[in-house]
Figure (cartoon, rainbow, N blue to C red):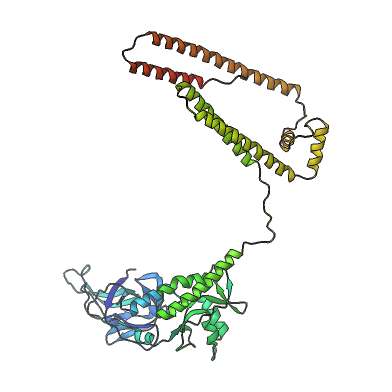
Length: 468
């Protein structure tokens, strides 16, 4: 199916009805592409079954309905009804653009049925005269195609006669739900207020909207920006509704003074929701955690080990360079201070951990004292280590033999490495004596050789292990 589109633009006139726009959808004039649409040949039967009006020919952006459409004075004209303000945000945006003269163009989309070529020399690809066609849709667009066509009549004067006010209540209970359906919320308010009857409760209705037209309060279209809904027969402010209206208020076409009052209502409920959210997490049954695990103790021990490594490395470097560095002494002092802190921390944490154990733990400790596993004055750390290591339990002969064999293998390996270290050190010392007896071309050469020897010594000493 091939859909053709033609756009037209023109001046505006005012209408008596609210949020209605009269448009000229098509004219018989020759457009800029040199083509003609015969107005009496436009078939409207399919369109009338679903007379929606689009924005930019986008089927997902339905903005209004054509409540009247037909050929008048040789032109296809339509009356477009926009939905009530505040119910469909993108429809509100387009309506405001039309009302303020920012959008002045309507474009029809149609399927050709019978055509007649206007260029006899190029009958297929040249301009056509569409004798009969089927209207598929029409849209508000931004760029006109027919410079001489008449198109829009707006209802700006009717809008100017409205008496907008902010009658929203600030005393509603708050529901913290984030989900929000503005259309459903508005209908719940209208249903509760009896808008389907002859005497609607307009005072109740205005409490759930940020703005309403006091000149016609009995009409549903006079209410904008719902932020509440009826729940359990009561009007309740919904958090999702407050947030939604806060984002839509700047795009609303209500007067500035009314918008300022509406903003005050939003600020009021947002403040109450913030206070409610802060108070919500407080519970009476929350018990503070008094006892930590031993993870921090392990981390502290690892830190002390690294400090010891840094001390040894600094001491070795100071000895090799002979520069009298004070860094090793400073690191040694840091190690001692940190070790004291680690011991104190360990005792505290183990004591706290033992305090959380059931009463049977004290019985176990006393039993271990009686059996001689720990002394009577043993500190909590000693008791805990004895429990964890299952002190007093003897290893089997096979297990003990395997452990002794493993220790012997480690000792033998260490002896081999130490022997190799001594031999290499002796070779380096001999090489150093030979270098010292040999005359050098300059002091720079002596310094370079000394640096090289020191580098080799560092690599060898790094292999040395402490005695088992």
